[in-house]
Length: 222
Image 1 (cartoon, rainbow, N blue to C red):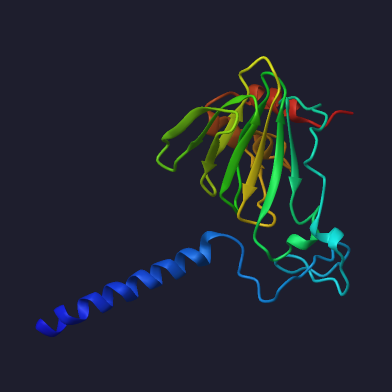
Image 2: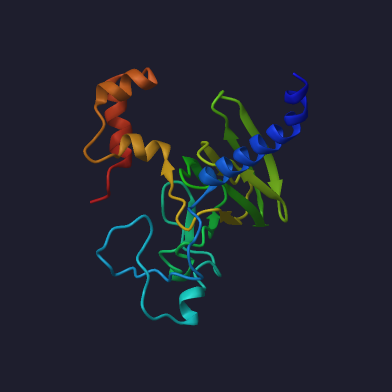
């Protein structure tokens, strides 16, 4: 027992190091193995990320893609513009990306998740009601204003809504070069091939006619 007590501090340190390393393993993208690996977005080779280009330039590490607000034309009144590896090839293997989100008055970035990243937003202008829901169904929400930041933990359903009478915008940061996004409603009601009406009706405790009506709202415009 005395020997065990002497070893206890060492055991605690080892367990702490294992916990830290385990956290790193699932915190974001895998660690890079070289200085840079500028993405070859034209390659047909499939890897966990993108193959490296043989030649690159400073332009591969720069973009003006989120410098200005975009035109909002969808039913939700919001627009997400990504500054990720698909628009900045130099981000490949670096484990970070950004986005700009613009909101019309009353616009919403509807409930969605990012399967590969935690998100932090900074309010450029306007004010938003934001929140995320834990796996215990606890809503963590707040009204945020210009200059404020808010964090959405990785994988949790979250949203932002502009309840003001003027436009709003945020800059978002992610710990992934390509965080991915699944918007809950389109994922369920606009999947291809479609999710069964019976599955959706039983899930949401509504009738199949209501399911078909909702699906029609998400159908591509002809």
